[in-house]
Length: 184
Image (cartoon, rainbow, N blue to C red; front, top):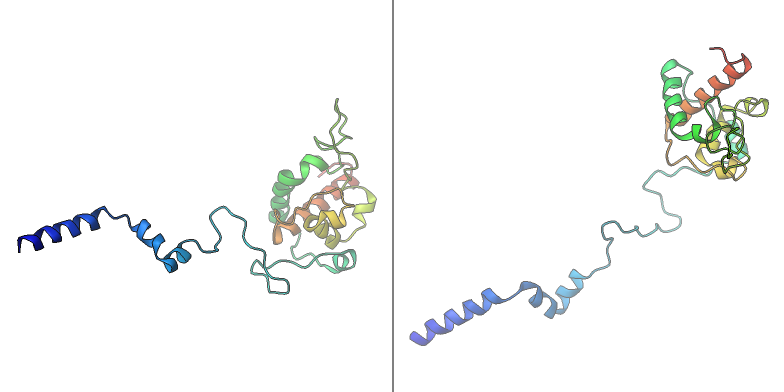
């Protein structure tokens, strides 16, 4: 009986000193569960298989013919214009300037010394853009590389949903101000 007590005490001591991680790695099928192929935190996810339905609701690529058929979904209310002004000042002003003339702080045509590093920033208030459809301006926001002569970065991932139409409405307001001589 005395030997049984010692054996039991020894077994409990060995069990208490045992690291479960060491035991798990010795058994083959535990190791495969621990080191499986999975997405780790902060790692890039595996790209989806071609031809599958996107779970993010990705938009189709926009081209010139499609852009001209897009209709503005937001009426030009003061709420829409104010929201558009906020977004314009956040994303667009740095290149296109306060009045939309293409003379933002980083534009080469801003009149500062030294000039900004970016040449070819378009004026949004000239006649060529004013004649374009709302859908065209919307498409430039979505995919500037395709619609914006390859110079403008893509803002479709930053300005989303109806906010894009709000920016279009604000650009139309800037165009109206430019035609009227800057008077509101």
